[in-house]
Image 1 (cartoon, rainbow, N blue to C red):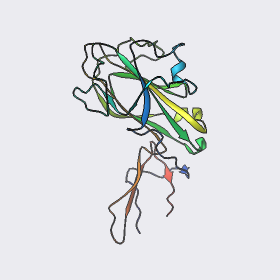
Image 2 (image 1 turned 90 degrees about the vertical axis):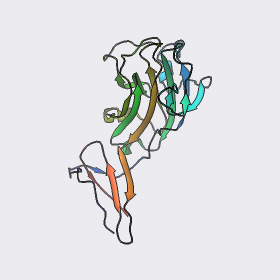
Image 3 (image 1 turned 45 degrees about the horizontal axis):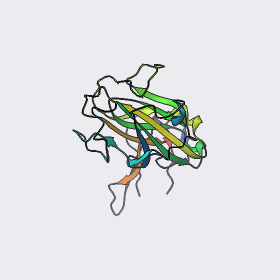
Image 4 (image 1 turned 45 degrees about the vertical axis):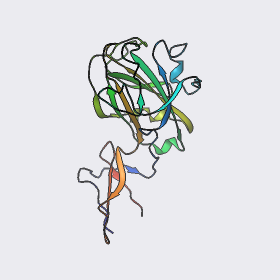
Length: 219
């Protein structure tokens, strides 16, 4: 068998020997809250693992208003009623030390803040450190598709067992008819590994880490 890496991967002195599966998938089940008021008291409580979200609504990703974008969970009442919504996705990590790199892949319209186990890990549309409440509008950015955000600096907040990815999505105004939130949380690889071009005597194995690195393939 012939195994090949993509041409844009270079060999550097770093080896990934372990692989956690995708931590949060696009269509995973989650809890969500419509931002007609603050999602918790104190305001940051909803970001943490211990928060009781049992009274929140249940849905699956992604989210949209159903106008222009058609995602799995439709927030048809968002325009004219609330600027933001909040979602919490629980996931399990068997071995945090095996997560060498971490990537948040996200579509959003218009702005968002993301938290991992209560720690802010990313924001778009809002200045760093700026206070954001449930009724804070985001700049009118339109939909950003498939942005890959490197969260490797935050792998230290992952826990063995239960974890939570919490995201608040903000629209630009009550009159803005569109919004979208589609997310994945991916350890170690931003694409793959997967097999393609299989024939009787060869197969191609393709993968892409967030940085150029040496990798080990066992078969």
